[in-house]
Image 1 (tube, rainbow over the protein chains, first blue to last red):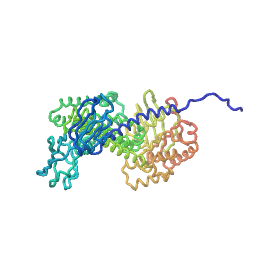
Image 2 (cartoon, rainbow over the protein chains, first blue to last red):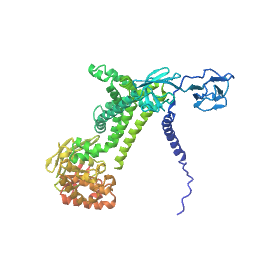
Image 3 (cartoon, rainbow over the protein chains, first blue to last red):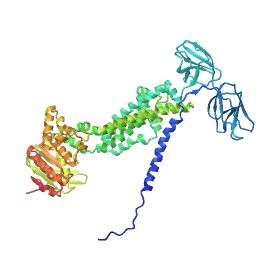
Image 4 (spheres, chains in turn red, blue):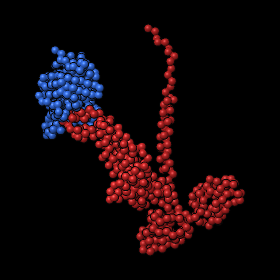
Length: 420
Length: 213
């Protein structure tokens, strides 16, 4: 026997294929990670000073010095724009953003180039001028317009008196006054300092957002339970039985998935014009509408998941159970459901997450009334409408946290099932 | 005993009609036929898992044609064994007994007895994924025998086992047959396997069952 002749046949390397897979998959994973990370990084977690009005005049650099008059020894907040290198006060040079103590009375902007718009910002830190306490409400007068709104929060520190320090809700405002409840005697002006708590604290303290967190958690849980209640029988039926009209039912089940969510809400709203008034009064624009709107969409996903789950469990198990003495119901509960636990968990998690993010149908069918039908996506929307991007981001972070917690719980339970 | 009288079966385009088979009480019947000739379908019909289009099925002297599978008194071991993945071996063996609401002591006595008979006493606290092919086969056999059925239906019980285990499993089936006196209907596609087993041999060819003498 001679050795086989060299064939001259070579197979191309697997590397390009594997690298391609990694690049295509990796790019998506990267975007997912970067997206969440960007949210986390963007939000300012530190407290912000209470600032007065803008002192830099709008305009362009013409070659002349742009000068802003400041009070020596007063605290100012400087934010560099695109066209500035910093700020010069005599010998003092401010290159970065933040609070600084003015060393002179003449602040000069340092432009990168001429004939560009002025984009820097210089604002004085508000100083407390006067404190009055009546009926346990402190009214603080500031030397500049503070720009805070009723319902926002303020962090009080350095009071040196019990019942003052901490985050307090602003109960009343005037252009240079703000009031908040305190439990203690009046304190001296010199010691008190005010700052704005970070947006996350603001959001978690806000009564509206607290309500929306509560409503979101309760409605999503209700929606999940309702969805599973319906998805298990439908999924089982679609997986196990053949009957006339099955393709039609299959299509119907997909409608909430393919319809634009807004249309689902609108369709519900229109449907409720045709039902008895007492029922529609109890649902539309009230919290049951939130649950119903979430349920219509979330349930469709739960049904899909349960159907796939049951499809993956061979019918053989039921058949054997039937010969051993089960009726169909017993076979379902004793043999099939224990195997469907993982799928049930997946369907529940999916329904919960869908419900948490549902916005369009809720807006149309339940409205966006604060303290009534406001869920977290609605809060995010209302924050955006009010121009508070940071507030919206804070609400988004709360939603991310809620979703992560639910996923971790589901995964842990799922793991237990696997490793048990 | 098993008596099939003029059974007609339909499944999609597949059809069997006028099929008859008789197996005396306590007999070991081996039904042979090529793959796809309807053996499994026939077995499912005996167990009540498939509706028949015509004819009668008599098991242990009772006409069970209209009875649900649970009331037919059959033990069924499918080809893939279908052990319940979420249950311990002990729970599988006790499954039929729990459904019959037997007492705890009675159930554990029966489970021990079955485990002894099948040589699986050491496996009682395992889950099916920790069993070898031969072990799984024994457990499936035990589960089907637990409620003392009058008829045991085996679908290709040896096909998934390697050659070495064949002989062992044949002896076990023989022993089970002797000790329990159950009527067994064993289907296989392999004539060599059929030759190793004692008892009545049947062939399913072109929709007709004939008995080898």
